[in-house]
Length: 125
Image (cartoon, rainbow, N blue to C red; front, side, top):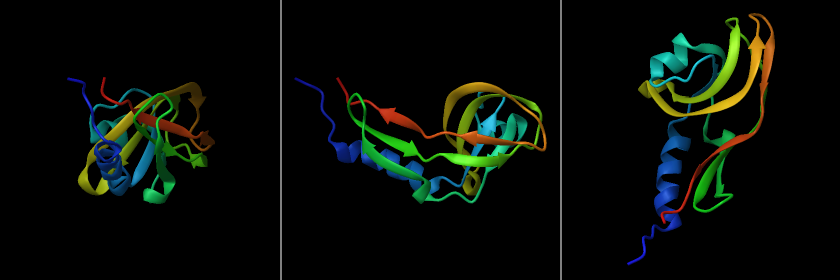
């Protein structure tokens, strides 16, 4: 018997992330919990985010994905090397998703641009 999950299954998970998202941080190291993503490894932050910053779409390979729009001129609050982007639910103290980014040296007081990026859930096989 083949494995199957309809798009509504993936959309449910993606909708949860979209509805809970409140901030995005640029991090020096991969966070594995909210505190690391929001404080410990944070180099820059985009706060006051809502579901309008991300859209659900068909996956590039299969399944579904969330696409984050580009966010420019985020204020750098700590000096370090950017290596990860974290999506956070600040009101729930949750790390929702984390991805790598192009490494870049950041200096306090400067700004950083975060390009469009996505998270894809592939269809079950």
